[in-house]
Image (cartoon, rainbow, N blue to C red; front, top):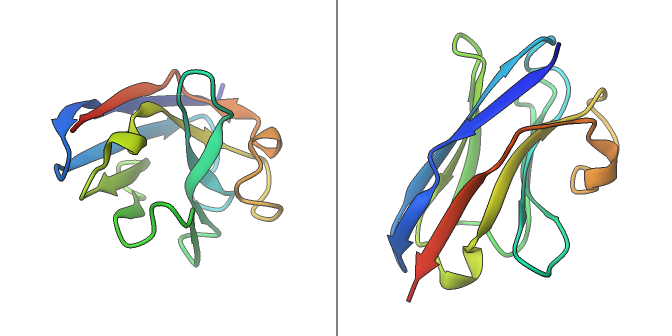
Length: 125
């Protein structure tokens, strides 16, 4: 069955960096979209970044453009989210997800069928 396992979260000071990893299994890796989402307490889940169609299409939320980079390693079946210049407002639980399509609205979490358990990112000022 489909499994997504995130790691790499932690606590950093503003301006710091983290790299999140999501190891995937149970489906054809790379074709369909894989996304990173985040959810802060009391807030809606929001799309952070996505990678689709064997990396030919990348998407980012405006709030993270220029600071976050999504990438994937086919041999390791892993999607990464490199985060630099972190801000306190980046604090949230971060989730990896995949959907059964390489199309659609990348940031619409409803379209994503499979989710990881999440990894916490906390940025202090």
